[in-house]
Length: 349
Image (tube, rainbow, N blue to C red):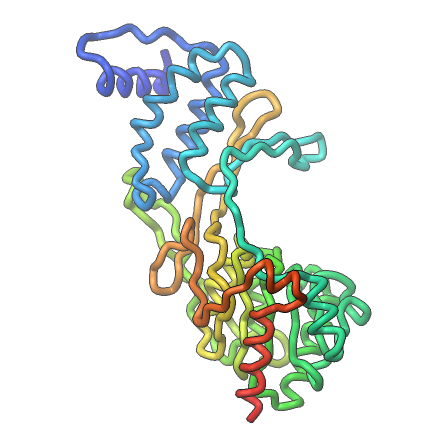
């Protein structure tokens, strides 16, 4: 019996039994369960925050995992255990020969309230107001209007150095806003843009000076409440920076990269967050092997707001809340855009 099995045997004995009980050497399938349990035990930052007694959970699920007669049965036990985190990022999956992940299985899903409709947005708000969209420069992910007509840009993905034409289009947009001496512009992130390593690059186009960012929290020790917090700064980037007011549109579909961007961007004194509460899912993760072709995402870091409020499961509350209903969108109305346009008018007076 190896060290890991001894730990589980002791755990089970102390938690469940009043007299010594022999714990048999488990079948080989249990090794995958143990790897997942130990990886979360070492790295996951959620236990204290979510009041999860991980050792007690390990005790509860060890026997079903040990009694599993197949890999599939053991995976089901792992999925049931991981569902207790209520984190939609957690999943198990496979890698193909080119190391591309596939066959994702999520133990927990969360409903996200989408507060925009792309057709409504483009047809009723952007096309009548100098919509450039995907036809000029960068051809996907970053759309904008002529700033002389409507200073608006939306992000489907975050422009960064990996796609030079994307940054060139972004810089052209920013330069036009500066040349026009605009007091405010709209940046729309409701489309849940991705590109984690690009977010600071993007925000730097709107930073007058270095600004402290959100808090990136990971575990620093064996105790569940031992944390290591870092707060990367956002530095000015690009040939020019727009330092007027940025009206940042957000919603419940903003998770992961988009939510991290909002958490950092809202610390800028020139940014006003408008819309609905973000989705509340900002986990970073590593991988651990389960068995066969199966791997598991292991949550290793999360993001807190500048004021040290947890975002996971709660989201980021906007500075100004604007409700959007399905009836609004069905009627061709985008209440968040309407409010943002009113704000632009106020700033331009």
